[in-house]
Length: 445
Ligand SMILES: [Zn+2]
Image (cartoon, rainbow, N blue to C red):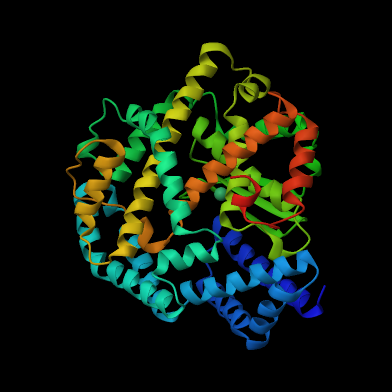
C-alpha cells in the first residue's frame, strides 16, 4: 500500500482519537472543549483540501491494482466531497446558529407553545441553510443537496424513494396501533414520542440500570467472551441522552457511558446498541479509512439491540418467557414501528424541502403526518432535526434494514439459536475485521 495513503490514514486516526477523547471527557462531566473540536475540524479540513491528497485519492481510486487500496482511496475521495459540502464556512455558520438556538430552547421546547415560538424564531435561518446547501451542491454539479449527499454516501435519490415506498406500508399499521387511544392530534412530535415510549414503563423494575453490567456480562458469556478481557469499559453517569461510545484507541481502549437516570427495557436495548458500537471498535478493521460509514456503524450496533429483542435472549439471560416475554416483544415492536414511521415522515419532509426550499414548513409537516399516521395534527409544530443534521434521518431507516437483514442472514446460517460463540466469530470475521469494502446495499440490502 502507498505510504502517502497510509500516512493520511494515520493522521485521520490521530484526529479521530483526539475527538473521541474530547467527547468522552464531556460525557464524564468536563465542559465540552469546543475550541479543541474546532481545531480538529480545521486540521481535518486542511488534510482533505491539500491538493496533493486530493490528487492522490482520485488517482488511486481509479488506477490502483490493489482492491483494498482502491477502496480506501475511493472512500477518502467521498469524505473529501462530504467535507466540501458540510464544512463550508457559510453552512457551518448557519448550523452553529441553529445549534445555539436549539440548545437555548432546551427547556421551552418541552411545551407546544414554547416549541412554536422557537420554530418561528429559527425559520429564516433554517431556510437559508437549505438554500445555501443547495447552492453548494449545484456548484459541484448536483441537482440539489439531497442528491449530492446521497451520492457521497453511495446511495441515490431514486433508490431512497423506492425504499421509503416499500418500507412505509410495512410499518404503518403497527405505528398507528402504537398511538391508538392517545391524543395524537393535540401533541407535538416530541410529546407524542414520549407518550408512546411510556408503553414499556411496566418493564422499569425488571430492567434496572444498576443491573446492566451483569446483564451484559451474562450475554457475552453466551457468545464465548469473557467481559473482563475485552478492552471495553462501561460506566453510568447522569447524561442528558441515552448513552455514547468513544474509542480512545481503536482495538485497545473503548469507553461506554450510559445514562444512569433511566430504567426499563428501552434502556436495556440502548445499552446493547452502545455495546454493539464498542464491540465493533474492539475488533476493528486495520485502517481508519475502512471503518464503516454512519449507516454501517449504526446498523452493526443496532443488530445487538436486535439480539436482545428476541425471545431467546429474554429467556436465556433474564429468565423471562411465555406471555411476559410476548408482551415485552409486542410493545417493543409497536414502538419501533412508530419510531420508524416518524423517520419516514421526517425523511419525506426533508426531501421535499431540498426539492423546493420555499415550501411552508408547517403545512408540509401536517400533510406528511396525515399521510404517515392518518391523523390531522393541530399543533402547527414540526421537527427541527433535519435543519441541524441534514440528510441524517434517512440513515435510521437504512440502519433498521441492515439490522433485520443481518439477523435474517445469521438465522439462515445458524438457526434460531443465535446466542453462541460461532455467531460472534462470524460477525467479527465477516463484518468487523474486513471493514467497509463495499456499500451496504451491495452487501446485504
Ligand atoms: Zn449508535
